[in-house]
Length: 176
Picture (cartoon, rainbow, N blue to C red):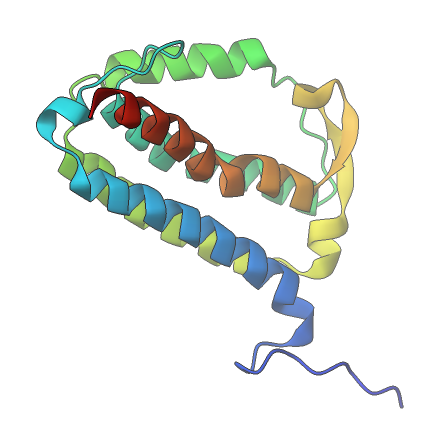
């Protein structure tokens, strides 16, 4: 009988450590974005980001609103299914439509969605096994390159709040 490596001291099974680490990083980024959101004035909430054009409020709502899609795409990879037909043009169109549809989003609405969807995303990530995270399939957004579920999570759902938080913070430093 082969001994299993010990799990973390919190009682988490060893097999779940990678998924838990990914989920914790997502939660940390979402919480940092939520904390910043709570500190914003109305004027800051409506500030446009140069080069992007969207307001800070729209960006916070954007991060919150795409967690379900990012997680569903990762689940496809976890099942070994290819992600086909998704292009950067599609992403840009989706983002532009979102910016128009949510131009008047309130801080409370965006914050609530951010907290709910990030918690659901983290729970979905925690349900993945190491085998799921390591499974790869072609992804059209990356020219059909076979990518792992873990890579897609790290490059999208986990990174997303950090990416926009950095841009928002940089813009706020320039206007404070």
